[in-house]
Amino acid sequence: MPDTTQLDPQLDTRQSETTRTHSEPRGCLFALSQPPLMIFLAVIGCLLLMAALHDLLLL
Image (cartoon, rainbow, N blue to C red; front, side, top):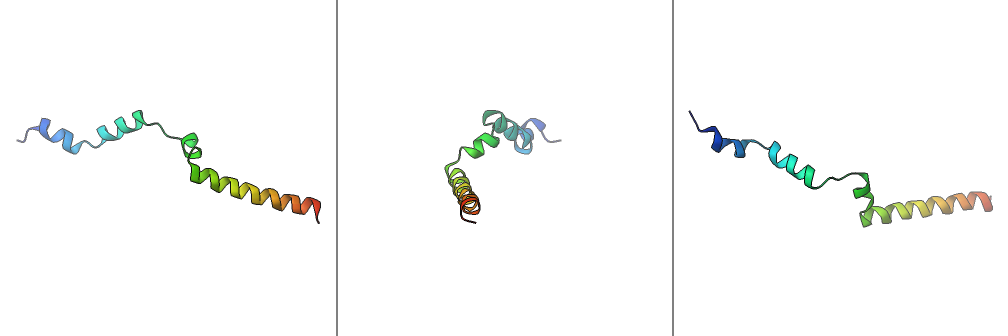
């Protein structure tokens, strides 16, 4: 019968996942803090603003 104390660290992948999630909680605010995403959202927002102003003022 194999020794289970030697096999547990190799087979138990949940241990590394739980320590990673507790040390680095990531959510929506982490995603919004990324510069490429903020640049993308700013460009889309400017395009929407320009389209809205065009509709309101020129049409």
